[in-house]
Length: 327
Image 1 (cartoon, rainbow, N blue to C red):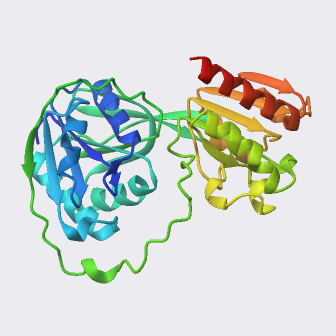
Image 2: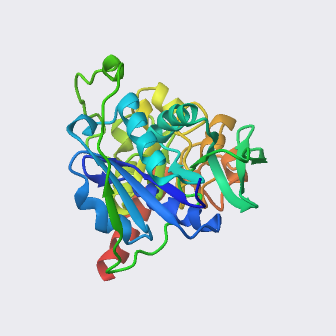
């Protein structure tokens, strides 16, 4: 085992999930200079220069038609091959849907110590120490990963800011062949159905604008989409709004939906039930717009506005659009 970090770079259809770049900042927090990266997929060699710009010394490529779309068994086998080739002390990956599914599968195969959804990382005498949010964000706990074995850490999105890329940076590359194993065909890909319509996913966005039941209809969510668009953000919703059919449950923010930690979270007409607060209280800056002065959302908000969202949100959208036009 070498004193090295291997970063799993998540990509879909040739597009790198920006959260993956944040893993390079997490690697710096561990104090390990020897940082490798792994890219798995089909036709991914064109991503090498982009990844190298963030500080990877060596990039392992596992490129095969069987890896065009994510499947847990094939990707787990591929990532295990990369880990065997890199022989790292630590493996880092983002806590995304793919990361949540893939990390425990790989950890079991590699007999690794695993911590997921981590907020802070450090390392002392070869042992990783991680901080996690517990009890719906009410407290944090610090854990150490077992020494003497591979240590895997999945890091929550936006827990670290991605470093600035370096122009002209390069990295050594190594291609690793993919060999299918017995039983890999137990899960077959039958169809790829797109449901988001190109809208950003709330769990990956730097800015999230969410609406609650106070929007009263799916049609009224138009003003939320307009504000999100001008901010280049994602649209979220409370559980009440999703249960009422105003938005898809894939946009639900909360303990029973998606946990988000964007740089900016704007809550429009959301009172702030404990389940919703657990899903967004880790946001760097929170703006709440609500007519109820006593709404719990104001207890966690950085800035609060006691006003009618149907008045404030369009005005905010126009003001931001005007600022963008003037530069």
